[in-house]
Length: 131
Image 1 (cartoon, helix red, strand yellow):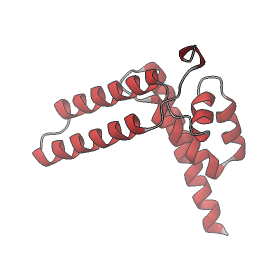
Image 2: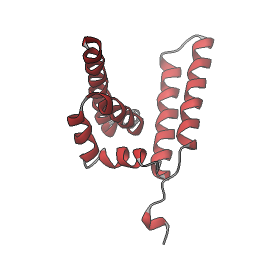
Image 3: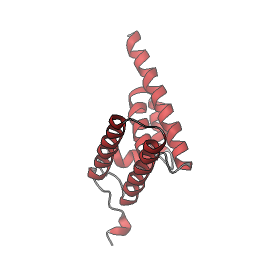
């Protein structure tokens, strides 16, 4: 029983960190917002009904979570922003912080994996695009 409580608090802490970084991402184009919001939604759904409800009802972040949970995926705009942010942030990291060839290869592989994941998710069709 005690272990379950500890895990719940770890999930809650990870959710708060994720949503904090997502908020930073709304201000800085280098930090991808959508994946962090989805991560926060994952952690909150396993830790706190209150925080999960808050996130789902949030005017900015709520639609991302609701669409994801409904299986609607991302809009084309969200995919373009996510891929651009991933490419930019990984490129800056490679130029500034990673010196080893193995580290660079790992970073490139990770960036390609994340970009592939984003691009292969369902694409949400907006009502204005169906008319």
